[in-house]
Image (cartoon, rainbow, N blue to C red; front, side, top):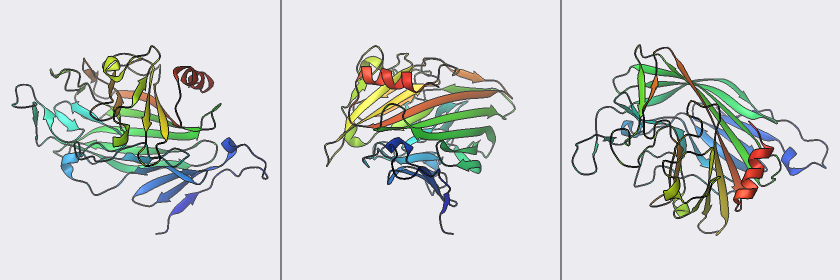
Amino acid sequence: MTPTEVAARQAPNGQVEASADPISVVHELNSALSVQARGVELFRYIYRHDIAASECPAPYFHPLRTFADEVVTGNRPHDHRWHKGLAMTASHLSEQNFWGGGTYTPGAPGAGYLDLPNVGALHHREFAEISAGERTGFVEHVDWITAAGEKWIEERRTVGVSYVRGDQGGWLLDFGTELSNVRGAALDFGSPTVFGRELAGYCGFFWRGPRSFTGGAVISPGGGSAAEMMGTAAPWLAFVGKHDNTNNVSTLLFQDAPDNAIPDGRWFVRSEPYPVVNPSLAFFDPLVLADGDTLRLRYRLFVFDGARDREQLDGVIEGNPW
C-alpha cells in the first residue's frame, strides 16, 4: 500500500512564524510512522520490524532528528545491539527481561550477565488514534509478552509532538504510558543495581545517543557531570553533544513528570563510554505493580539545534508547563 498522510493543520496565508508550520504524520502501513515538519523527518516510530528475539523486539523511535536534520539517536550499536534509539524497556521484570541481551544474575561469572531464555517482546496491537496539526501524535496499544508467550502487561501509549514555546530551534516529544498488570500476580520492576551491580540502575524510558555524543556534557538543575548525576534524583536532565561531519551541536532535555510514581526519580546517565539517559523506574529499589493495577508515567524530550545552558533550559521548562 502507498503511505497514508494524516491531514495536517494548514498555516495561514504566507506570513507565519516558523513555529506555526504544520506537523504531519505519514503512516507506512504495517511498519512505521514518520513525523515531519519544516521539511525534515523529526522521527520515525518503528512499530513492526524483523529483529532477533534476543534483542527484545519492541516499538521504538529512530532516528530522531533536529530541525537541522542532525540525528540524535543511536540504534543497535555494536556494543549493545538491543539499544534501539528511544524505547520503553524493563531490564528486570519478575525474572523476565524486556530489555534484550543478557540478564544480570548475582553470582554469575565474569561481568555477571547471562544469556537466559527469558527475553520477552513488546507487540504492537493497534493504533487507537493518529492525528496531526498543532498537537500531532498517536495513541497505541502494546502487549508485553514473555518468552513463554504469556501476556503480562497491556500498555496504552500516548505520544504527542509539538513546537517548543519560546524557542524556535526546538521541538517536543511527549511520551505517556499506562502499564496495566494482567499477569494474575504482582509484577516487580527492577534493575541490575537492585540485584547488586553498582550504578547500573537502568529500567524504563531509555535513550541511546549517537556515538559522536560520547564525552558530551550533562546539565541538571543543580549542576553535576554524568558521573555525579548517576543515581541522583532531579526533575530534569539535559545532554549536549556534537555531531560528526558537520561539527554541529545539539541539546536534548529530558523531563520526568512531577506526578510520576517516582517523582524526581533517579537518573541512569552515562557520557562515557557511550551516551545514554534513562529516568529509572527502579534504580536502587524495586517498584511493585499489584495485580490489576495500572502504572501511569509521563516523560518529555525536548530536541534542540545548538547548545543550551542551564538558564535557557530553566526558561524552556517554565515556558512549557505540563
